[in-house]
Amino acid sequence: MALLEMKEIVKEFPGVRALDGVSFTLEAGEFHSLVGENGAGKSTLMKVLSAVYPVGSYEGEILIDDKIRQFKGIRDSEAAGVAIIFQELSLVKELTVGENIFLGMEPTRFGIINWSELYHKASTLLHDLHLPIDPRVPVGSLGIGQQQLVEIAKALSKDAKILVLDEPTAALTESEVDTLFGILRKLKDRGVGMIYISHKLDEVFEMSDRITVLRDGKTIATHGAADLDKAKVISLMVGREVGDIFPKVDHELGETALEIKHLTAYSADVPDKKLVNDISFEVRKGEVLGIAGLMGAGRTELLMAIFGAWNGKFSREIYVEGRKVEIDSPADAIECGVGFVTEDRKRYGLILEQTILDNITLAGLKSISGRFLTNRSREAIAANGPMKSLRVKANSPMTVAGTLSGGNQQKVVLGKWLLTNPKVLFLDEPTRGIDVGAKQEIYAEINKLAKDGLAIVLVSSELPEVLGLSDRILVLHEGKMSGAFTRVEATPEKVMAAATGQGKINT
Image (cartoon, rainbow, N blue to C red; front, side, top):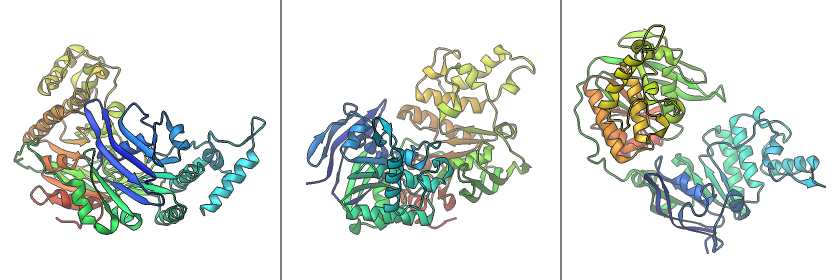
């Protein structure tokens, strides 16, 4: 009898089937890794298990100890022995370590929190886990790595028999990873079943009893770790060809449009932690340069630091069309001819309450409108151009951006930057959350822009997208350049090997 069995789980979002009949089992005392590309469905499956997506919002069955479970909320799943540690920490930084560990489960006496008992229990738990952390200090005073370990202690305080860890080592130092793995081995000996999600295949193979591969929301294979190697796992993860959705266009490359030398960017939370480590590259006019890598590789941080928008420290040299420029802010970047379609269009790309007109002219307003007063007629004429060429489906430029579909919102963001007449355009996840039809329109526009001589830097978590659109591909792994391929050289296996730190730079 399996400790956990998830049968034929189906989870849909508007226009997207994130999980398509996924099945998964976990034995008591087993370390079972769940791997796949970004967007394969790993985190979604675990959110179903932990009732972030409650019963009724998905199809399929969850059995724990051979009993069907229907969790209406997170407390129900916790009561059944499920604890999950997400990539994003859920700690309250103003509270102490002890308060965070027992938040919502504080020991009380006569209806009043028993602080002495709370800190005694927290101290005992931290000692058992060999974590030298004072339970009375504010969590905010700890480093990110120690905060992650507190998050694990918090999960274990609930006497979990199923522990889910989603990329738990992303912010940990090597010694902290060793500490974590020591804790997990002891939990394994106690019979705790663990589901481990990680892009770091070295860790996966070090700890796993079994490995399950997801791809495109489906269960591809489950094997004993001893029966696999890294090359086989990578093959199972990517296992598909780039389809005809990507038009094959030969771009005529011109002179260098952008050159970056020795870019290093540091974490805003851990000032000494390098998220991007000494990256140099160039992109030419008419070229689509793909930047590949798994979550946490440093792709977005790279673009943000070039654009002058990164919150942490960064250093680099920037040359636009051979001229050294200083970019200290997004305004400087726009002035230098750099545009940036950001990863999160709703947070950084659009003002959802404003009209298409207001959004599409925002970045280029200085050149479109008057010197002292906005010229609405000129703005409307300017906005109509990209709306027509990008085929934005809306009644008029006065339509509120927040009422548009995801694909049309993305077209508005792209149109906004095209109105600035950029020399270089950054595209960070340009097709995230949009349907296939809208994707094809975006792909066609990217090829058209490159054919017209625009230099494009494309970041995407979808490997077929990078392979299908790029003239060259640079691969990042843990902030460093781990691979460089021409369109001819690049294969899914080579790129994924480099993204997981298994490949060598191939120039």
